[in-house]
Length: 332
Image (cartoon, rainbow, N blue to C red; front, side, top):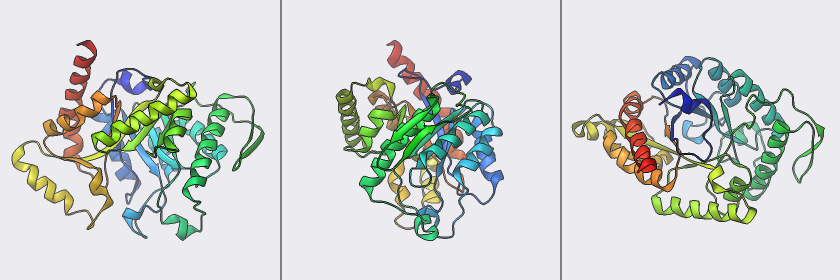
């Protein structure tokens, strides 16, 4: 992966990007830093964390660093890779506060931030900390307003805004982000509301991996929403997050699969996110249909203990093959 790929968000183009979604459920900062620095060393284009406080998978007492402060620390200790929040729930903080955090991290990173927002999902922190968790419809309304507030503060001298959930009067944000258009990532796949918000506001649309027919339908729905508001869908980069367990050859596939599955709780929700248990070549074959559907960003989900073998094989054997396939598609 070239440094040119990581230096800016390719808009509506053909350049694929590959990243790791690391999360932050680690016991110490060095574990997070090692993962991010190794991702940069191995040529990944992107690394991201999330904005949860008590993710259900970690249990009520599981470790989880604060998202924005960790992201800033990781950004200052890396130099090339895109630094992303995937994603921040609108329930945690006022969008003006989120906009200020994002602008600050963009400066800390030298213009490498991609800031993701979403309507929020399950988190034990709501009950533990007594933070309100509105119904889905309300959270989606908040998301739509938050996107407008943040973009306004990033790009305009002064913002007046009156919504159902947020109000700003002569609001200012200085300094502005380093990037003239700070990439706004919106996460989620709800077809009636979330994808409408994506059509209105997103530079990047991220969702967890789904099977091809479902994903194709979501793309069609997004295209319909874009047509309704007169937006070119090519301005939005489709992005998917998935998990995989890779082995260098077929002989070790079964062993590697059993090792990883033994680490997951019975009935883990993570299971549906695994696309491939196999060789790098099998993962290439599984991802190629998504390339042909127009997906531009492929993010390998990781959790502690980090599967270094999968992370390395993805960088060494999957990424070059998909770049080659992309080049043949463009020039063929």
